[in-house]
Every structure is written in C-alpha cells, then in structure tokens.
Length: 420
Ligand code: ADP
Ligand code: ASP
Ligand code: MG
Image 1 (cartoon, rainbow, N blue to C red):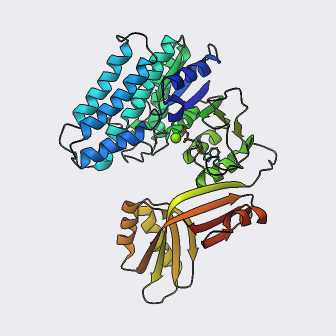
Image 2: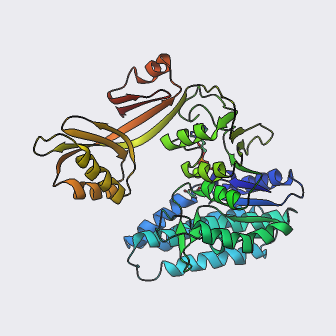
Image 3: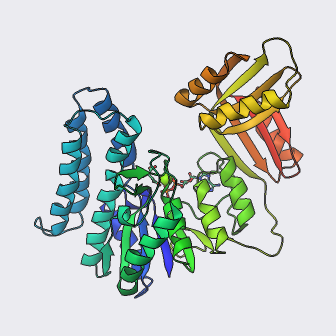
C-alpha cells in the first residue's frame, strides 16, 4: 500500500485538483492513502481569522467569507451540478467555523488556533474526495481526528502512537482494503476529541506517521519541484537535482531547515525502512528523489540551506564568572522550558551565544527565566546559511559580500551566521 501526500500548491485551484486526480488515476485500482493539505495559502488566511477573532477586530466573518468564496469557486470549476453533495459537506465545516468564532473567546489562544486553522484541511480533503469519486477514483473520506490521536499541546501536538496505531488498525485499515482513502494532513485530536495541529507544514509528517503504522511500501510527497535539489531553487538558481538521498542526509538537511520535507517526516519512515519519494506534481513522469536506507556511499553536491529571521541571544555572566557546566545547564534548561530550539551555539569564557528562530513569545520566556543570572543582548534580522559537503569555493561564493558574525566548520557541515 502506498501513502501519497499532496501539498497546498498542488490543490490551489480547480485545475490543480484535476491534475491530482489524473496523477492518482495512473495507479489504476491500487488502494492509496491520500493525505492532503489546505489549498494554496488557506492556512495563512485562517491564521488571519484567528488574529481577528482574538483581537476582536470585527472582521472575522468577512475573512471567513473570503475563504468560503474561494473554495466555492474551486468547486464551481469541478462539479457540474450546483446541487452536488460537496456543497452540503462544506457548508457544515463553514457553519462550525462561523459558530465557533461567534462565541466568547476561550482561555487558550493555542486551542483557539487549532480549532480554526484545522478547517483548511477539512475543506480541501472534502473537495478532493468528492471530486475523485466524480472522476471515477472510488474513495472514502476520513476525518483524521478519528484515528490520529495526540496530546493536548495545541499548535505543536505530539502523536500518541499507541492510540493512533489502535484506531488506525481498527478504522483506517479496513477502509483501505476496499477503496482509496482521502484524509487530512497536519491535524489530529486529543483523546477527548478536541482538534489539535502538528505544527506548520506538518502534513508530510502525518503521511509518514500513517506510512509507519500501516507498514506502507512507500510514501510519496508530491511537490512543485522535480525533487530534492541542492538548495531551494527559489533562492539558488544553480541548484541541481539530487536523485538519491540516504535517510541520514535527509534528516540532516531538514534539521538545518531544508523546507522541502518537514523535519519530523524522516524518523517514522526510517524506523520501518520505508522509502520516501519526493516527486513533481507538475511532471509526474519525472524520476523524483528517493530517500532510503542506502547501504552504499552516495556522493552529494554541496547542499545549501537557508534559515531566515534568526535572532542571536548573547548571555554574559553578571559577575565575570566563567561559563561552566552548571551555567550551560541552566541555559539549556530555560530553552527547553520555553520550547525554543537552538539552531547554533557558541561558548566563550564569560559568555554564551545561541541563535534561534525569532519567536518573540518564546524568546521573552527564555529571557524571563535567565535575566537574573545573565546580562542578555538580542540581535535580530540574521540569517544562517548551512552548507553540507562544502568546499572552499562554495563557501567563498556565498560569504564574500556578507557581514559574517559566527562561522562553524564540522567535517561535513559548514555554518555561517550573517546579517541580512
Ligand atoms: P507543499 O506544497 O508540500 O507544502 P512546500 O512548499 O512546503 O510543499 O515545499 C516545496 C518547496 O520547498 C519548493 O517550492 C521549494 O521552494 C522549497 N525548497 C526548499 N528547499 C528545497 C530543496 N532543497 N529542494 C527543493 N525544494 C526546496
Ligand atoms: N496547511 C498546513 C500549513 O500550511 C500544513 C501543511 O501544509 O503541511 O502549514
Ligand atoms: Mg508546505
């Protein structure tokens, strides 16, 4: 059994949905688990609904209407009848959204975020499922919340593997024996039934979780690029296609920020030795990149990964004492409590520097926890460039005109922090 994941770009309009149906048709009668993201930029639009609701700006219903009209338009390009059942199914989702945002604001902003933003995947999966049935690809639509169980860390929910495995085997597996199944990426639910989300761009990860539980033969993520390249082609015009990647290389690349694959995707498929194919929905005949447990060495070109919007936090001990193990311990604990990942770290005699994503909420938490122990300085608008499999020529090419702040070299990885 195969698991496919289609991202927002692939279903951004009616032509996109038709193209996805044509791709699935290539696989004949195979029963495929199809995981889909919200269409185009819908998740961003829903984030705006969340802000408007929380700030009580009075624009919530208008913003929902724009999203609704956009999806009705997509449907008009797909379904010949205005009476198609898809409209009733969608109406239920928009009704719930309108109702939720008409009530008093609950206490937790993250809870609110998940209840609202999750609508994007519900909507896209309903449209895709109805359209596939119309186009002759028999499938069942599944509310993923019935099978993908998580804890209640809203916005960054952690999968409950035991419950998810049990529910998947009980509900999803029998469905897949009969037909293909269309379900939502990115979302899950607590055991009490409240909707959660797995973190932005999390649909690749959803597909990997199911591939793992269902022991899939492969997972394919269909993207708007030929596969994994030696850099984001939007930023590096000279990026070249990479046809094979080991799990290890993929994990490294995604860890440093190669956004073509969500970083959590690799572990579940590596654990079951399931190959991951990154293929183009624009050119489905293309070979795509295969990520797998290679048992021979693969030669890679220099691979460049950019992380934008970085902040450098510099901690100076207040009394001129050395940065010792216990000070480092205090620091790392504060980052763990604030759930703020350190992207680069460097220690000096009486100072320590950490580079993190500029997440004001999390940074404020860290500063609050540590300001008694350290003088803290924050510098923003920085960029980390990571080059895997570097050579001097490629380093020079990329840093020659930059205002470099920190550089670090390890055998296969070069990193530089520079000002924007
Ligand atoms: P999805 O539609 O599945 O959400 P994304 O937009 O998240 O897809 O991922 C595809 C994008 O990833 C590409 O359009 C490309 O700009 C970007 N990208 C970043 N790094 C790479 C890379 N190394 N190779 C290919 N694409 C990359
Ligand atoms: N729709 C979600 C997002 O835009 C999840 C995803 O696309 O993977 O972040
Ligand atoms: Mg994405």
